[in-house]
Image 1 (cartoon, rainbow, N blue to C red):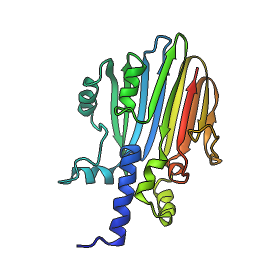
Image 2: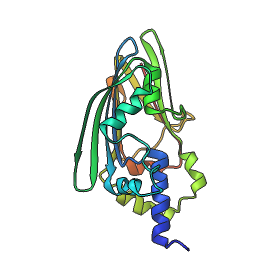
Image 3: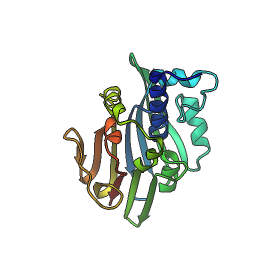
Image 4: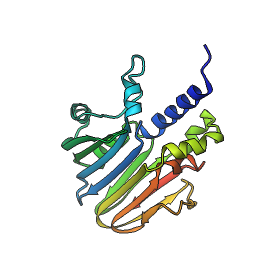
Length: 223
């Protein structure tokens, strides 16, 4: 049986969301680092109820790949040495589930295991009171899915109002940069917000930005 055009678009769109953002439509992540390497991770993310319903259907249990409930988080963190759940809350809007968690971590290795268990998209190094933390979004990984450029307006519309935000609070002044992974600065939309230096550096951009650039997106925090 052939899929309708509308169903094909939905399948491709959901696949991209799952592969790139683990089913999140909005994500805010604040990383607080102490001088010894321990710290707290503050996460707030939105999951569309539509995606949640799809994940509950028979045969689609793997659509949602991140913890949703408090017990999910406790089970997940129990498998990571040096990580513990400090706080959890969940609320609802008309279309989204909004989850807020605070996680304590003992060192940068633990932090990386929390945000990137497979070790593909993040790395960190700390020496004495200086170091580097980076996250890479590999848009080049999406090229094999041959996303129809005619879908971009639809994607932009569906992501309207949803942001990706990450901040880094270091024990000393830090610097933030965003490049394509080869050192070339990226052209950001006018709505993007960037704090490049200080004790707290940060980056906020609409989720649709990740679909409107073909470059890899490399976020680096140096302190």
